[in-house]
Length: 409
Length: 79
Image 1: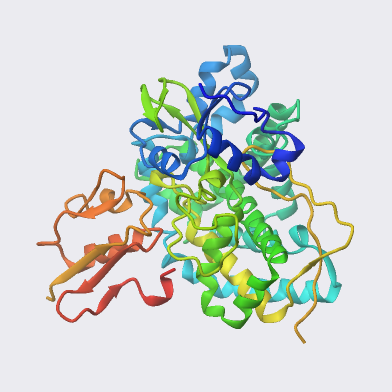
Image 2 (image 1 turned 180 degrees about the vertical axis):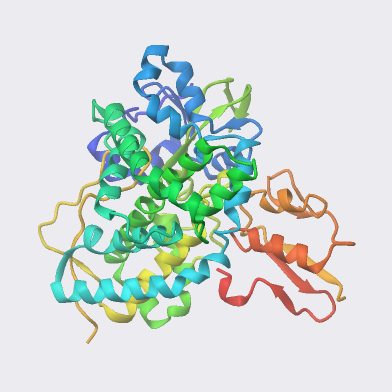
């Protein structure tokens, strides 16, 4: 095993604040590194990351199955609600179960299919910007970035009147389990509470749709259950996944992108002068500082990765943000260049688990920035702000982003 | 019916395998885990376009082999 001078502690204040700097050093010293503290391999080179993500035959996503092996029966019972729901999330399943749900949902999330939501997103963005201008100073995350994805996911579920604040609260509790606050000692109990509360809230809605189906995603899932291709657990868990996964990551993407522009105002001006660069700019923001830093896989057999022997059952932390700054793949990887092309980043992962909501997220981010560059000067941080991130291995999530917004005219 | 030309852009393909799932007679994966065309013979235009639509990356392009007219994706979807 190679020796690096880097600590294996991925949760220090420095690594959480600047994961890119840490992964840059790790990639240079030992791109397939066994991290004793985490108990698995950390992959930071683009080619290794892509090879693993595209190989679902040899690398499993069955997170709950592998977790069950680590826990006693008693420990498993303590977190039964987590198992009951998360075991059915397609993100944590392998083929063929993953394939059934993915193919069913995919047609509703294609680049073409999500276009029907664009006018709605445009309106929400306009309204949110006008409200924000009136305030002058806002917390960009709470007052702006959160509004857009939450409205969209509720629309997809055909339930715009659901209680957003409650959903946010429960989603945050679920997130405690594996995204945010890895330092929270009660994280499993908190996540169980969040899951139970969200399930109790969604169950009557599912039953209502069974009685009176609509054209929304819940009705679609129920009809697949009635046709025998999904189970009730699949339906319930997928509803939880859509609500939970549908807003947090996109919110962080809009916030991280805004911060990236604030640190590179020349790129903001470039986009303002030439809005036809919008789609390329969004790809670059995804690459530069996406909202998901890493994903986990388990070796299904003994396998070589980047010249290292990985044993069956060992886990791998696949660093998306590490791969996205690999100089072997990207010129000037630490620079923000909204004209970058090609830009085959891994912000949404690669392979069969590539983010279902990728096209939806792209469209929401496009419309957010199109709205902003048309109406606003590049946002400025409120002086004295001490920027900090939630301590998470997975999410790149700023806690608060207090900004001053000024209209162009 | 017009003769079709189908291409997969490897600067876009992320190996989601959705095209392989929907049309295994037309698409397969290469050694890098990206999609390549096996054959487009005897495949109807509608099936190939609805499969191309499934790609999250708009990596699959469907054209008229003679005129070069693009059937999918429309320009505004490309990124």
